[in-house]
Image (tube, rainbow, N blue to C red; front, side, top):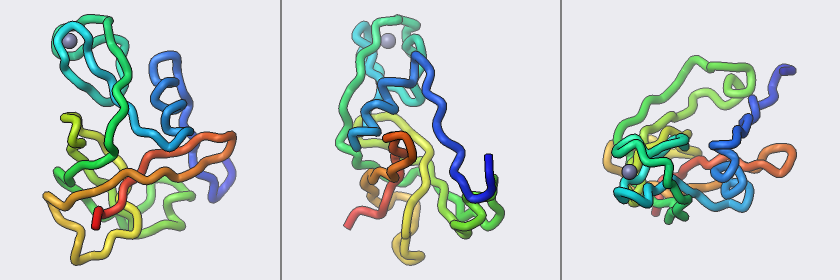
Length: 136
Ligand SMILES: [Zn+2]
């Protein structure tokens, strides 16, 4: 990795549908066809009942900030250029929690319980990374 490049996702057989959806600027999570549980991140089986019968559920991309932190030290050279940046745990309206950056968040709007909407950061090779912005 050269300085200033974002580390790119490395899809696996299990995560590829998630990244394929993201490339089309769609957010998708797994839903168990046996018990109805929903989960993120992608896994080979349902974490509620261990069934392997999972399907991909398109999401609204809307959610609520469960918690967040403002990073002042970067994990890599690419993020160093974005300091300070926000990492949040987001409760999707579809019932799962995911980690993502909150982009361009005004300090007075960044709070636990704030509503957020997914946006997609385009990456090289046609990929895209789900991120979030404060909604409204
Ligand atoms: Zn299940």
